[in-house]
Each structure stands twice: as structure tokens, then as C-alpha cells.
Image 1 (spheres, helix red, strand yellow):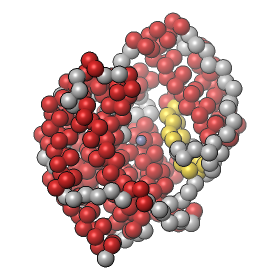
Image 2 (cartoon, rainbow, N blue to C red):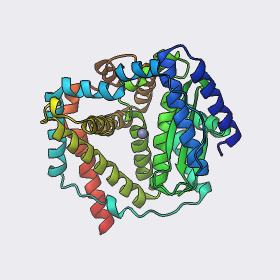
Image 3 (cartoon, rainbow, N blue to C red):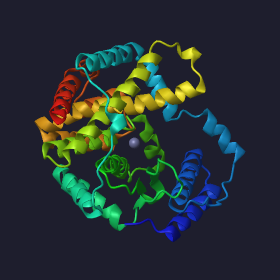
Length: 356
Ligand SMILES: [Zn+2]
């Protein structure tokens, strides 16, 4: 299970050629991003910068700057429903206070797991979800699209994901620490790869719109399912509880920031704020949506899987209300924090149990 450097270099060269040849703005933008991603993979794997020439075409660059990207899409969505998001974020924060939630994220020391056990665990979880997901994992594993990387670039952030649509290919890179926290990251990244795979037969112009979706939702959801799977089956349960705690901490932090933005006038936002809102929106709403989906999964696994598969096929082609409808969740459901409350209550109980 390793990414082949020679293959990677071949791909970098192919994408560079395509970037030179393309006559379309969409393709230009796509190839340019792909090239940067591929170069960053090379850097993560080797610690050396790959010197690939990136042609800058001023004609296309002009278009890129004027086009809406995922950043503005999320911000438009957020500000056109500002009252709704103000109420949702207020409700969520209240819910944390009511459940006396406390943060253990900083003391999240994790036990190391043997490499063999680690992948056995991942296999078991994927199979518990469905065979299709397990087969996908087996497929990209065989195809050298996964790498457990050592820390060559001396960075804590050694995992990432790349999509490479003209080859219908995603790469998953995760640091090789082999802990439960690290496995949940692995599942998160695999979730991205799986959702891209579901739209890999679309044309470039169609698949480019995937960022209209709740971008982090699917990967957050798989991550959460994984932690719940461990908890339910008493596998590495203490580490699973710690990771679940971090999941709720992140959810709370993203929502807290989003909540602040609901009372700031859009005209007073800096470029940094826009970047921030986009991030808070993707992760905060993604994590929150996952809780609703988990609830559906518990009630009827088959229905939840079918809904998610449909959702993945329509990513980016339909508007947000239609996406939520496919998932069986509506905006009003969002306002109700009963599901979050149930999770927090059980979680806090499990923390007390762990202590005593
Ligand atoms: Zn992600």
C-alpha cells in the first residue's frame, strides 16, 4: 500500500501537458488545481519540492477570479438564510451548556495499535457499513492510491486528499501513527474519496460543481459512524470516547464562530473572514448534519445507506433544500437540537463512567 513515485511523476507531466493544451476555463482551473495537489503529494512523500512548470495563462486567470467558487457559494447560502443560521447556532450552543459538556480534547493521548490490527479494524468497520464501501477501499488500496506517510516534512498535518477527475482517481494520505484518532482521520479521508468516486463518471463541467454540496458532511458522517461503531462494540473504547469528545469540541468551536458571524454585517467582512465562514460552515454544518444521519442509520440502516448513495450521486447538481430532502432532513429539523442533546447526554455519562 504505497503511492508509486514514478506513476505520480507521470501524472504530473500529463496534467501539465493538459494544462497547456486546454481551451476551456473549467478545465484550466481543474488541471491547475490537480497539478498543485499532485505536487503537494510529491512533497509530502519525499520532503522535496517537485519542479513542475505551471503555465500561467492570463486570459484564463481573469476568468478564474471572476467565477463563483465554493467559497462564495457557502457564503451566499449562509447570508441568504442568516436568521435561520442564527437560530440554529444559538440552539446548538445552548444545548452544549444544558448538557454540561466538557472538553477533554487537549489530553487526547492515544494508544498505538499494531499495523495489522489497525487495518483489520478498518476492514471490519467498512464491511459493517456495506460491501460496496469495503470493495472501494480494496480497489484503491490495490491501485496504490493510499499511503501511510512518515513525517518527512516535519508537519503535524500529514494527511490529505486529492481528486483527480480526468483519471477518476483519488489519493488518500494519512500519517502512520496507527491510533484510533488516526484511524478516524483515515475513515474521514476515505469518505471524501468515496464521495468523489460516486460522481467520477460525470463530465468535467458537471463534477466541477461538487463544491455546491455540504463538502465535509459525508466524511464527517463516516468518521462519526466509525467512532460509534467502536463504542458500541467495545473496541478501544477509551480512545473512541476521547475521539468522540474531540468531535463534539470541533462541532462546538465551528458553530461558535459561525454564530459570531451571524451578527456581523456582510459588508464588514475581510477576505480572511470569508475564508473562515466557509470553513466553519463546511465543518460545523457537516458535523451537525452527520448526527441526524447517524440517527437515521440507527433506525433503518438500509434506508440511511440508500439516501446517502442518492445524495452522493446528486452532489452539486441540485440546491441545498433538495439535497436535504434526499437525506430526509429539512431545515426545520435543524432547529431542533434533540438529537444533539441525546448524544451529548450519553457522552457526558460515558465520561463519568470512565472516571469512576
Ligand atoms: Zn475533510
